[in-house]
Image (cartoon, rainbow over all chains, first blue to last red; front, top):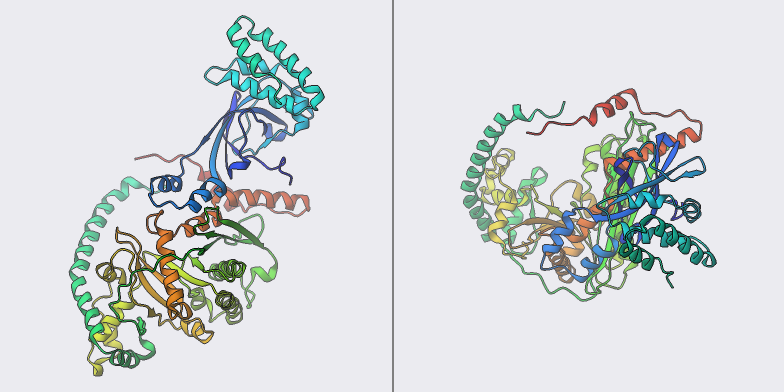
Length: 200
Length: 394
């Protein structure tokens, strides 16, 4: 099993708008904000494509005990920060689904099942899914999430999945689509376009 | 149907009152027990040993060593460069209702270099057993849980021996979340002499490795229920010509534990004298040079008393004994009286119900791939149907 194939947790709660996943992994293997992921739905007939927009660390009694202790040794601190499988919960916004090999950029017909494994989308699938930009509408339509930051993280991740020679062209096209979608709000548009500048 | 809590509430009230009464009775007994221990301590070592010899094989209490019985020793300073390791094991027992017959043993462990500032090395080692010879004992019966516990204990000791060998030449303490004696052997030895001996010899071989690599090993027992030292205190009060089965059984301190005795005697961080465990199982250990001894330790200022078991080669070597004492106290500081490496070893080893369900799903998938029929029994399936029903809260 390669690192890409390994599940990054399982679904604990879900709706057609998105799902919550939980995992116990050491810190280097946590998913990051803006990660594209997928979870099985409809008894394996489809995969819901999600975009991770929130990560939180669940309550951990040992960590609480150690935090309150005045006698924590440097080795114990390093153990907790590097080795321990911290319970992480993340929320993913549904931005599409996959039927067989084709991607659809709209809300899925059914949410994933509870305890369905969640996997990172492979780089090839990120490239394929993000060829079209209709999913940006789904991100922009959600209240109470950091939409602008998520938009930027999602598009930067999509650009990074492409060969370096294609990244700039992709981001320019994405910025044009953002301008079309949020054009009436110039302040917001400026912030989104600024965050889409190619990263070096 | 879940536990009917409203119906049990009335019984809980009676239970609370009865436990309070028992506690009060135990507190009344304690001064007499402490006095009996002081009496035992006032006897010459020769007289006390003679009394233990009079009691013979029927005696199931502590045997004294050459340390004074009322010893309350402080720990030496922690050595620099000390490596402390812990191991713990977990298992999935065979279940005839599962899709396939198998069992799993998983051992987790870590080794922490004190003063290094580096994260400890951690390791988790799962093993699945599914062959007919794994699943049946020497008489052809399905392997019992006690035997699996014995195999798990031997794997834990193996993990500690490997850590010790990897740190040969450095001060090293290995901790186990249990006593050192393999109690499963007493449970199943009569029916499975060969199997038990094989596991016992492997376990003793790992103790050999620990000793020869220069390490120390200790079994840590939290909240011990043993009353071995109280039995010794009672024995010391018997007239020499009245030591018999009846008088040994008429121990007035049977309802107390040694913990209560040493709570008064020990200050925070102090250990008691070492004693010898008189279990018949200890003879096998003694024959191989690993006679099990124990002491009590007050691990913190709140008065938590633990029982620590060590081989005689640790107990009789002041440097090794002090190393174990100091290491355990250091390990207990951040975790309120239980060694940190054992907390983490448990976390690394534990197999949860969810893990088990996932494993069974994978096994079922492999069976399908191999065109083998394998599904949970109808009983297990119906239990799963009702398991997730919501329970009413009080």
